[in-house]
Image: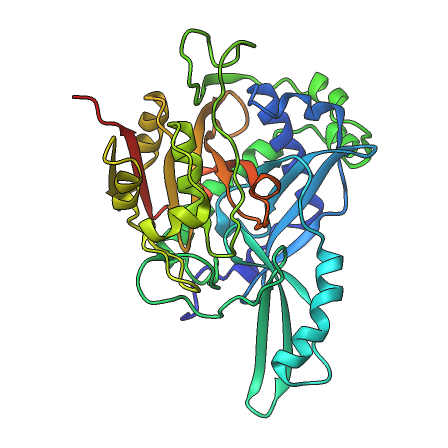
Length: 403
């Protein structure tokens, strides 16, 4: 990528501010009553985050675990650079299903073999195709510096170049290098408002954040107020409110059973919502899947054929926040396409704060089929994800076609 006027390496968030962004993110989510987040106040933000690099070598994210004792509430992903445009990029609910140290131990001999060297660089945890993570090894050889990337969960090698066309599967691309200067400028301006939020924390509380055993006392002292709070999740039965104990929350997470089955697993989740049951191997051909290449972005024809056209499905290459919101308001889950990846969306949150810079937070409730697992019930992740931090490429809609 040509050099940028706004290089991420010169706009890194100071280390001492990272835990404050993470803590403020948890406080906001709890104050808004986001599903899956209200009990996090009983935990503490672990002060040593996991550093995730971009495949271009620059720091990209800092992942902070929130836990109490052996109980892990989840992970807060904080931006490493202001060019990302958000303090908190996403919040993943529950413990993670992969182990980096184990992956490195198993992959190091493989990396030496694949790079045809006896010594490789220290491994790096990288985001090779947001939000998918991998282990990257580098080595110096006769033809210069070379690298190899493996998925941290499946341990499979990741192709180090995107395929031709708009495919959703498994390949490597750089989050930073994909940001044009105009986009970076907009994101940096948004981050300044995020900084006003963080700057609104009194100095006394900042010191407390650095040592707190739980987030509860900070929440009691830092009263966050909302101007607008609109949060909506899917509910199959509308006779009760979505937060009522008897409401039927009929949307389940399915992990991808093959490393490039993200679109396939997403389709499986959405079809299950409408009571169509297929295995992922049965779904794949209908979506135009090719081994090692994934699926084309427009999978709408497959949704129709698998339901004998009882579901009306369409492809939208102009994804917007308003369209996502409207689908959930109509109780319709949909495929959310981002570069090289497909996920299911099952909710949203629109929050406008009476705090700091008065920033507006727009989030999607994402059922992500990554990480891989041969047992779909043991893979995937559920996250609240900042809309503006992510590049959205397309949606695939599905709904009952009533006469």
